[in-house]
Amino acid sequence: MYIELHASSAFSFLDGASLPEALVDRAAALGYSALALLDRDGVYGAPRFHLAAKRVGLKAIIGAELTLSGRGGRGGGAGVRGGGAGHPRGGPGVVGGGPGHPRGGAPLDRG
Image (cartoon, rainbow, N blue to C red; front, side):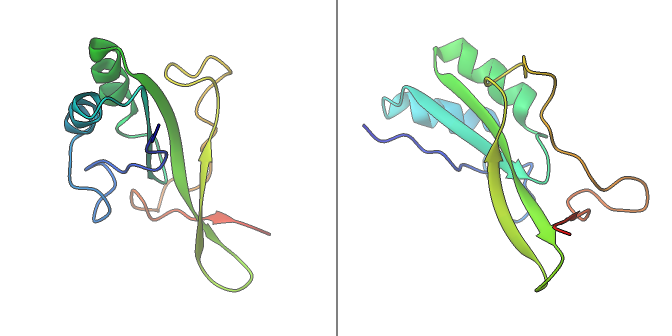
């Protein structure tokens, strides 16, 4: 059985075009048992994704695709943390950025 483990929503500007609810509805229509949403540099679509998945009985897997910087320029990486929606282990674990960085423009430093 196929499960998409790296879907991006419209909350990942220029990466995804569909709203989280549309992604969930399509996954349910295709018979998926689970779907992973990894928006860029944050979990912006997670609340809507979680509610939509709960509505149709789909397991919601939430993570983030992180922009990394440091030696060798910019790169990317994907990560999933916690037990899914609701972040029962203390939060999404996405850190970095802060004031002075636009949304999606606060890369993490690899050191």
